[in-house]
Image (cartoon, rainbow, N blue to C red):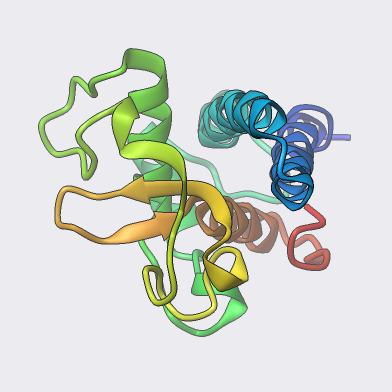
Length: 188
């Protein structure tokens, strides 16, 4: 197995699935109504979000350093990100979405608390929080239905995004670029 696909299978996918599972545990904690459990699970979701964001974002570094027969040759990390971005669609529609750069901003914010790049679209790690989105707070079809608590990214421009959708869109972009079949949404 080539290095990019192996990294995707052994590192990235498990991180994304652990995040998804933590989100499901948060839903279950809310159903039980136990405030202590909700708070504990909320922190778990954010820890899993950090790991998933960093691992999915760093797949670009792996693709640059360990070329895959499924990928073109890349000269710079910007070339890798551009290729992935070219395949990035909003939840499998035909709408292009700039989630590769948003994922970079989220990963940087998680790593540095306050991003050190001036052109970042979020203010820092405090822009990525577990909250209820409320009805109509997100783009149609994005995130959990009914305003359930989930990890939300608040951009400087005011837009709010469900981190789960950002992960799905970037993961799907990688799968398209690597010419791999897309699993069911949320299955990673």
